[in-house]
Amino acid sequence: MIDLVVARAHNGVIGSKNALPWYLSADLKHFKELTTGGTVIMGRNTYQSIVDRLHGPLPGRRNIIISSTLTEVDGFEVYPHVDMALAATKPDEAVHIIGGAVLYEACLEQRLVDRIYLTEVDADIPGDTFFPELQRAEWQETAREAHQADAKNPYDYSFVTLERIRSA
Figure 1 (cartoon, helix red, strand yellow):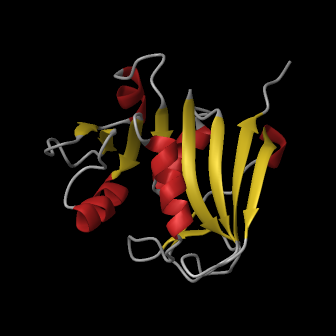
Figure 2: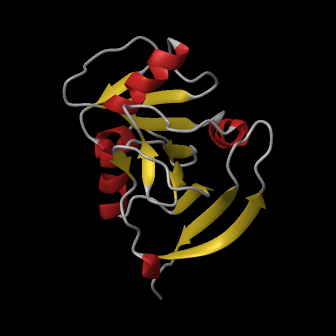
């Protein structure tokens, strides 16, 4: 199964200056729980933001970059197109699309994603990168876990699971 993992503010913002425009400790923990042991597929900008922060790949995961300009990066596999990256995965492999906006849009348009793990950040936050508009008729909310702001999480937020609605 291929899923998409994203944190989005009310106004659709997912990034600012190639970084998350907020810090939610619980969301980072949730992301780690969802993706550890699986494969994460990211675009070049997301790769760069991870390397800037961690100085290497996300630990405990197979890290794949989609890029037409990069060819070889230590600790990462690189493919020029998402379909080539997906062809290199096993049928039973947990595959997580983790951004950025261009990759999200391509995967949604091509209907490659069956599930979305969405963290809804309960705020309008300034930014320069936005999540594409979902076709709501194609998605059904199957889970929601609401949380209040606290010392480690400055905004109210919800963990939401959306499943693609399959036509009969």
